Amino acid sequence: MASTRHEAEGVSGRGLSPAIWQQYGFIGGNLDDPSLKTFFFDDFAGLGVHATTVSQGGYMMFGDTGVTIQSAAAADNSEGEFGLLEVDGNDADNDEGYLELGGGKSGLVRIDDTVGERAVVAFEARIKRTSVTDNHTAFAFGIGEPGFAAQDALVANTAALCAAGKDFIGFQTLTASNDEIDVVYQIGSTATVNQVKDNAATSVAATWMKLGCVFDPHAAKDKKLKFFIDGEEIVPTTAVTDAVIAAGTAFPTDEEMTLVLLTRNGDGTSTAHAVQMDWWAVGTMPVDV
Image (cartoon, rainbow, N blue to C red; front, side, top):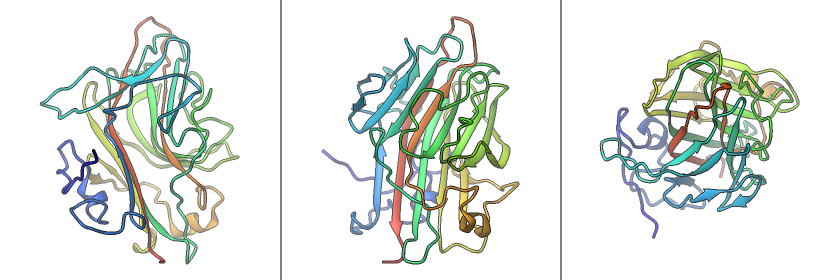
């Protein structure tokens, strides 16, 4: 049975960030046509156990031997958990665990500045790790091109985005600075990762953090792409300007994208460093119809 969220929670709560989702009417009790304002939310209550390189329940997962992506047992009332995705068993050097929405085939959203093709695009997730110590498990979360959940999506040892280049917009940590949350983007066929903000926030072990973004083609000049951490908009060091979006040579404009969670261990010891995701969401709303 489907349920409807009538209101987003505040900055410090478990829920979706109001500045992203209520601002554009994705939630809030409206009766808009769901075919025109599409929204996907997964609490992972029915995730189950995922097998590597097999499309299951709309997801594609890739994991090294022993790495699991599955429902977790945790349900902490103080943290509001209801369904929990956990990447675990990552206890060997460079263990990988990746997940994407769309079964490895489907793109759901596209950032496009072409008149007649423009749409608001939003995404967010609530994530935590058991360790943020350097050389332990790093991650990237955001939207990426279909087929991202494959071997070496993150580079060995560093956990940087793959050098071969895949479309990506979102957040990452690196094994050498594992507590630092960086805001980045990259376009396919290049090896260049562009930073919107280095060390935009500091993650803390066993502590939830909400990471989100919204693209608004009707926003003011050079303010069309906004990133949020724990519901608060960050001040970019290098903003994604209208010119960068229009050029489409560094930023993935006009590319099909889907939700991705990418994790890679940089630790050669026998200790697993789990990554958990409480929920994630993505939505889009055409503005030229």
